[in-house]
Length: 110
Image (cartoon, rainbow, N blue to C red; front, side, top):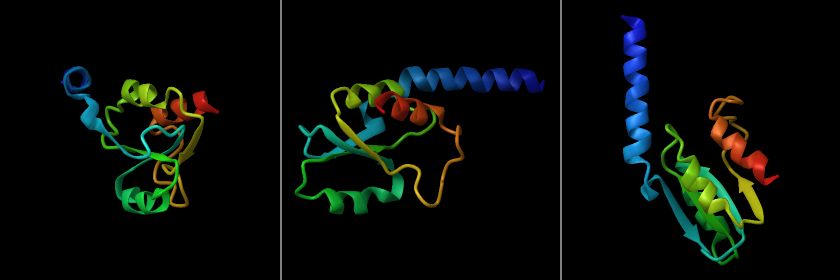
């Protein structure tokens, strides 16, 4: 019974990945032509927007973490020269490895 329920949840996740991951999973603010990017999610939005105001920087706000919109984010990061990640700060919101897609993307750009 437990195995069947786990399989059912995995099938649902695949449906979500295929049907619901659209451009609405992320928002981009700031200088859209900039090669400099701040990436984050959640409550850091206001502070980041204030910090980048008038600077040649764009801000990628991730709005969906599970399933992570990896293809959309990778497409946005294509051509970016400098990335500031505001995802793992002092609070260490995520344990290392909890959202491996974020770590994968950031490692690729280093």
